[in-house]
Image 1 (cartoon, rainbow, N blue to C red):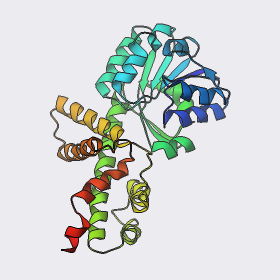
Image 2 (cartoon, rainbow, N blue to C red; image 1 turned 45 degrees about the horizontal axis):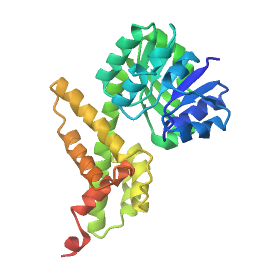
Image 3 (cartoon, rainbow, N blue to C red; image 1 turned 135 degrees about the vertical axis):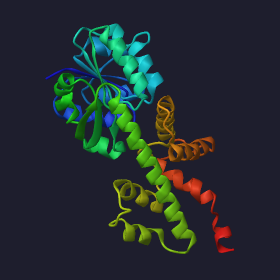
Image 4 (tube, one colour; image 1 turned 120 degrees about the vertical axis):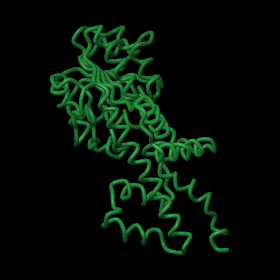
Length: 296
């Protein structure tokens, strides 16, 4: 089995790493937060002291980081992956970043004889734990075929969507649909509540019809229970929509609904809700429809 390096042990990275470990792979892990590394070292995973060190000791490196600047720093910066890389190393970036940044990283890796794939994921923490993520890959077919068995340990759906960058274009499309779904669901549930109809009854009544979706099934119960523990944080979804809008601007594509929901997310971040689950979009809608006004 390949020895795998894993960089980024956050809410998604840690369970993904553990699924690789369960399959019997040797792993070297690194994160800028030392306590995160300590936690997995206690489970039998080797400690990496830097991104460079991880690359030097492994055959495949997986990065799972918040955004493009962090990935660029981890790969191209001092003590980064490319400083420790050997020819033939495969770098799989599973972060959700701009497709333009993915292509920049791929070009830099090619100059060092390193293969690069962008392979962002969807499904949040529950599916990361279960190993049932949806993984969208941008890569050459031959490199994709090499890493497919590893990706299948973390995801139940692994699809090659095109060349480098296509994985993140697909992820941006996914994030647009999820964000707009949550916003529409929020408006619907707030309307029901302000009309005096139980939102849980509404959810159960509509989930089997055309309005039903994986988003509705996952997020409506959280809204009803007022449980905004993050499976996917507002600030990260705002980042994804920003990347979608920047990519769209470069292609002269108008995304009016995406822009509107991104403004909601920014407003929520400004009031200190950036680390809540993105289902907390409902609180933005609720503030515009106070119950006292609904009764008047």
